[in-house]
Length: 335
Image (cartoon, rainbow, N blue to C red; front, side, top):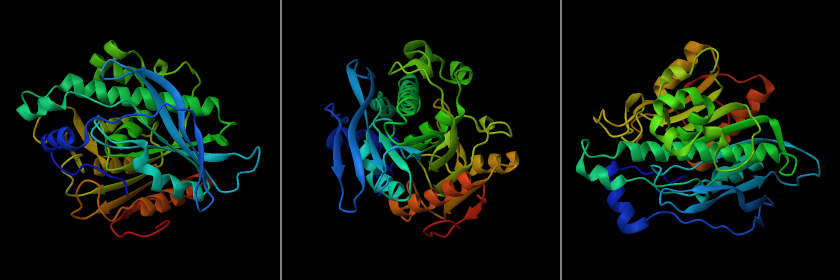
């Protein structure tokens, strides 16, 4: 199951420093791994590089999982997943179960690493001391790297058996925030909301590699994520989305709140309940899976449950048969 932090951010900082530390990355050549269920994957594929929060050049890598018995020249829809971890920890390996299940369901499934790190120690001083600029930079680096990963895959779609007409994206927690940002945040919006980061790091679509191709997202899997502005979803922009969120989430708001509870200095976040209402108002199909009383990363939303529901929803989107609705019961497949 996807491992998501379920404690307040000040506790996250202490636990990370004492037990986890900052993540490390493998930069070796891609390796092929065959699983018992005959799934095949490419591990540690380098999609770019950039300077990280520590000022060091970092290779950016991804794992690519293929459906069983891939035939030469055959292409499949692609789902990219982005791990969570407060923009501070986590790795692409957190989403192995999700990716295996999605690949078994007929998708090329991709899990990426991205640059992590911000001055989370500042949060120990409370709302008045939290380093908002550092947090904003971390969020923006994730957007840049994810955009670069998508450009890389589209540019090399044939090599990786990807049907570039059907690109889906998703993630958990910070990864879901990033996935939603990729789908809805353009450079004009970023120049306003992420002004400090744009000045320091440059544009979204020119960072982390030299690919310049465009892409179009066809659907989103939001696992307890949020957007910085709910009005980014409207009749012109709304994309088919499947949401998962717990009503008692204190890390990423279920409806509307802030990155740190009751701290208006940090970015405001519009959670899944709010975004689902926007989807309904826009007339776009959306499925909202709610965990009543569930906290951050509800336990019933296992990797297999999410992959099963999401695969079914995305296939229905491709067929033009997707139906929306709100559900609070866990099942495998479509509701």
